[in-house]
Image (cartoon, rainbow, N blue to C red; front, side):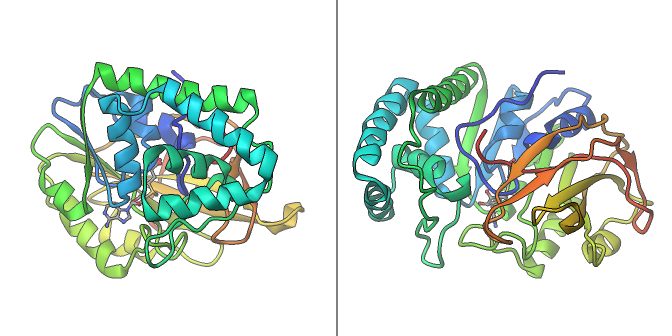
Length: 331
Ligand SMILES: C[S@@+](CC[C@H](N)C(=O)[O-])C[C@H]1O[C@@H](n2cnc3c(N)ncnc32)[C@H](O)[C@@H]1O
């Protein structure tokens, strides 16, 4: 199976490591549109490459970036030039340059600055304060934009631009409630909402009210869906899995996921994630992988390691099994 396409932007909860599982669940071709109400980095659609898609997010910066790439307003050449120029200034003058670009972006948002900040900030995360201003600090590496790193990002933009030329995708800045109302028979919805209380910021606040609205809207869909959510951590099981997603009505595939919150093995915290679908399906085994997890919101600088066991269907309350993970940064 093809490796995931690494997108040019990184975000919390990026699903690079479970693209394979999602792809295996969606084994029948989608007759209609692939719909993602929480598209984030878009690693899933870029990797699965449905012919037609509706990709939405409440974060307008993400939507602007991909729309700019799609319309050719931003080319890989323009990205290379911008990163080389700003990277040279950063190397010469240090972090002041990062904060100047951040201030300017917060006054006049634009895609090139967004990409620069996302790839030069601490842990490669995306966080906005209550007023919607990007507020992640500098990664403290003035030499960040060395030639190989610029080439890597430029190639990621080039790959995504090439895919966008070959497909019929629409990007929209919208709330999930509106996006899901567009779904019709034959479409396929992949929903990956923020996990409540995990990465809270301007674009990722997620309340019980949102959780309920999402469950209601998903249950009303006239098409198949897969929902990503957390299933169990060290302390408790996700109450919404037990209340909203009964194993008698929905298929629940679970994945064990380990977070390193410190330097030693005994500080590992396990989290079981779930893919819940309204159709039967068992996900493919996950490969053993080691990834970096941006943990700015939990504790500065955490890692995640995937254990690499296989996945299985589980009823809520059954012991977790399987492997898989989400995570990102530095790719
Ligand atoms: C877990 S991330 C999605 C990650 C994505 N699947 C990936 O692999 O990169 C959740 C996304 O939901 C978006 N979001 C949060 N609240 C939303 C809402 N009410 N409507 C639409 N999008 C929302 C956030 O901006 C964020 O990009």
